[in-house]
Amino acid sequence: MQLSGQQMPFGREDRRSGLRRMGGWLILIGLGLLVLYLRYVTRDIQPLFLPDPTPTRTAQSFAEEGKTYFSAGDLARAIEAYQQAVALVPEDSQLLAELARIQTYYSAQLASAAERAAQLTEARASADAAVAANPDSAYAHAIRAFAYDWSATEETGATREGFLTEGLNAAVRASQLATPNTSIWALAAAFQAEVLVDQQRFVEAQDKVSTAVALAPDSMDVHRVAGAVWQSTALYRQSIDEYLLAAEINPNLTFLYIQIGANYRRLEDEEAALEYFDRAVRINKQLGIQDPGPYQAIARTYMQMGEFFIAARNMEKALLIDEGNAGYWGLLGVVYYRARNYESSEQVLRCAVDGCSAEETRVRICELNIAACDPDDPNDPVGLQHGQEIAGQSLSDSSLEAYYTYGSVLAYNGKCDEAERILQALADAYAGDPTIMQIVVDNRDLCAASAAAGAEATPKPSPTP
Image (cartoon, rainbow, N blue to C red):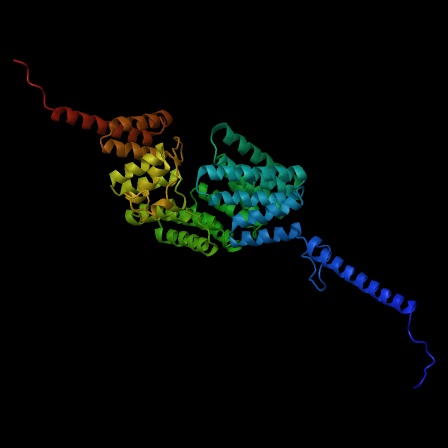
């Protein structure tokens, strides 16, 4: 047996060493439990090697996204992007003005007058905020002129005149603030020309827009206004040229192609008109946008060509996109009337002028085979997808065609009491318009002749003996 000289571990010292080891293990276990608690219960500790948190997006990144959507022609998403940018920096005049500009243009893609008016109300609010944020911004004042001018087109009377005055004042102020002969000055001059057109000051408008085009040949807005100015003075070829230049700069804005097509239609070049309307349809399909406007334009073109069946089918496509639009029901009724389908015309025009319930709308859509559903089955799955309440239209320039056509079809169908209500409304509102008054006279004569013929055909009772 060898002795090492070391003492054997007996007694208290051995017990103290064991207790220290046990205490160390308990501390480690407690720390482990604490880590688990913090990781999985309070989430205060994150695992190692996780990626860095996603940085918060800046207003400028949203603005760039909005520009991209605008270039693509998706104005609804462009508006959403700019609204997110404005939410981050609500006092940024430039962002507010850009938002107002796109909101104003977006109104051209909306089907009903009520939708357009609501959109333009938002555009005016954004433009007003842009000017309030920076009263010395020429760009903000120019866009305010644009928003107020387009708002005037949806109004009548004193409201319209008030908006035009606001628009003109804003354009003048923008010109005063802008450096002369710059692109911003040209934009202000163009929007001033657009207001002058709506005030029927055509010569002044032509001078202004000609100067603007010379100074800003790369501006879509300026070329678009030039197209509108030449169109208002029946210079349709010049108008087409300007709209085409605007479309070269922003090739995905469908309202530009609608205007080009409308000008070709005025020139009675229906094939060219249909080509540009079809281009608008294809852009909308690529973007997944349900826009009835191009179908309405195509329908009017085929109606002008006397192709009423194709016109009706395109108008029905537009109506199915926006079933509650009384204006679309009115134009469809006009197409049926021109096609001598007087019974269907009366049904559709009744909804356009007097309004229809959702159930009445559904039944008409099914009965007229606008959609492939069964009018006699209230539970038909296709029919249940359709039917919106239609609010009747008051008599105005935008509903005039539907009104006089409705009066005519009622007179033709022998419903002269109902026809007289419409004819009297036309006579009261358009007493100074010889064309409308001739329609009123002709239909009253038709009813008088029908009444006289009915009286002659009625057997007279024999005298009592």
